[in-house]
Structure formats: C-alpha cells, structure tokens
Image (cartoon, rainbow, N blue to C red; front, side):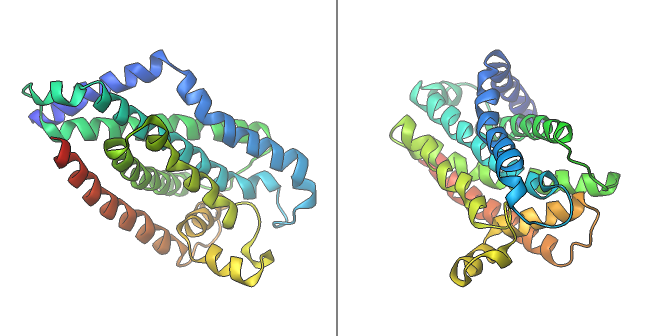
Length: 250
C-alpha cells in the first residue's frame, strides 16, 4: 500500500537524523540515569520500599520518566519540520498525508525503545534483577509501548500548534515530574492523605505498579486493566486532537 511505503520512507528519514545526531538520545538519557544513580546510591539507604533492592522498585518509574523526556523531541522535530516548510513540500508531492505524522510517531516509538533498553542494561549493572519470564517481559514491552504511543500523540499537538521551540517542548515538563507524585519512588501509603488520593488515581501509579509487578513476577490484579484504560484513553483523545490540529495546517 502507498501509505505504508510512504511512512517507511519518511520513517527512515527521521531515524537517519537521529542516528546522525546521537546526542539527542544521550540528552534524553541524562536526566533519568542521573535520577536512578541519585536515588539508588544516595537516597536508597534511607527509603523503605519493600524487602528487595531499591533499584528493582525504582526502575519502572525511571523508564516512564525516560519516555516522557524522549517524546519532547517528537514535538520538537514536528515543530522544526513545520517551521522549515517541509510539510508544505511533502503536501505538494504525491505523498500520503497521514504518513507524515505516522513516520514521526514510529520514530518516537523506536528512539524511546532504545532509551529504555539502555536504562535497563545500566540498571542490571546496578543490581537490578527480575524474576519475569518471557511472557511477562512481552507484557512489560507492550505496556511501555502503549504509554509511549499515548504520550507521542500528545506531543504531536504542541508540535503542530506551538509558536516557538520552547512552547513545543515545554509541555513535557509536567509529564516528567508526574512520577514524583506516584508510587514510582515510594509507596503511596507513606504520603499525606490528600497527596495519596491524587497519587493513587493518576495514570503513572497504575502503570508503574503493573510494570513493577510483572518484572517481579508478582500478581498484578486489576492494576493492568487500569493502566491499559489510561493508555488507550489518552491515545484516543490525543489522536483526535492531533488529527484536528494537522488538518488545520494541511
């Protein structure tokens, strides 16, 4: 199909830009890696989050922070293409219009997957150990991919509508700090009542708890369904508004 071919070509273009500028991935990795090192080696001895190694408890939240950092670059790449007039050039060519957006979305999925793999490898060096089997690792991969997809479509909106580079990427800051008010770093039971209510009813906690349970090969209960509902719901709503924003500039 033409749309698949066009998406493949444009995806290859975006990935070549990333591979030629690996500092993008390195920049994305700096913050989550610094946090993981800080919390494990500086604060870890003072935090009680179960009987296992603290890095096992911490890793799921760090992965979500890495993904939130990475999708800021999706918005930035879209903004840059729009400012350079590349959208207008592509629209004047026999290119399937939806393939332009999907190429950026696929680039986000792949680049963030690279970041996640690097962080997991470093966590292994820091003592992370998992009792998960192949199926559980596949489930973790699927949930992280859905989370990345949801945030990527969110990133498309400012990428297409922002008036400045700062505006295109600044939306990611609240997403990066949202894990701090969740079960990512400490159990929610240790939080004051008002904070705990918010922490237990926002998407990051459900996703973090699900990923953590899967990696530790523990029962996941209803958390996985709550996590999936959040990811799918955000994806659907963000996709709707992203497509509307795209149609305005076509």
